[in-house]
Image (cartoon, rainbow, N blue to C red; front, top):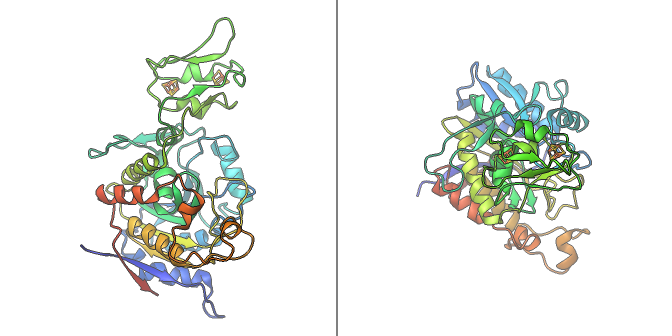
Length: 375
Ligand code: SF4
Ligand code: SF4
């Protein structure tokens, strides 16, 4: 089987080559310049970090990437889509404010910041995937769907539902509109938490399927489950946490769906991916805190194959010894180094990241077989 090339750079620096220089050298070596960049819109997909979380990728890296792309003739912009849950990134106004607080703004990032699925997460394009088993038409944020080229910058860390968050998670989940995220997360249609509902009628007005109504007596919303198609529009629009996700999907199915969404994001688009194994926190950057890192900072990796990239990052973390500071793994395995063990599975035993990588491979997104080239 043909192996994909994954390029690796460690984190040693010198007065003539800092980490930004090292990242630039890495991505150039890994083939960034081979993309058809001239005059094309390049969506740099990154996670801006929930305020309070400090493990996200530093904006300095995004600024350097934007500069490289612009010098090569492209029109880059930084992007992410709104979240499904309430928090400080669930609409474009709060999301941009959070991004700014975390250092991502047009001045520091040296390019424009665009929220991919619009003001309230309802701006998306459905991209048909003929061979999909779970999500035949992923709902991808319009700005990302309209971009000519996708570059992902991924913070590699644990994830409470997917096992780990890397390139596939950043692309498949991160580029989904709010309705898309509902499809990814939920095994069924949303539900109404009546105590939270203020009867504002917004969900009723915007349900394209006439499936949500206000009770004439209580003035609370209710869903007609015979008509509801689970599009997620009401979840996106409700600002009171009253229309919410019903049951969360299993990790295995979530990872299958993330793979299919990734296929939709990358379909017919040149793409390139960079992952940072730094601050490997046990959980997602969507949390408003980041628990202590579980392994040392290992390096920066780049590839044109996001599956191979995730596999290489997972292997490096599995091979690494755990840190013996006060972290979630050291707490339980104080006298072990856990080299060679699946640390993400130890932290989140109900997760199954391998399922997602194998499904992505089956969908033709890439391969788990790779050659690691040190730059
Ligand atoms: S948008 Fe939310 S608060 Fe308003 S009626 Fe619908 S469920 Fe209730
Ligand atoms: S999920 Fe979509 S179809 Fe179902 S009630 Fe909400 S807006 Fe209507």
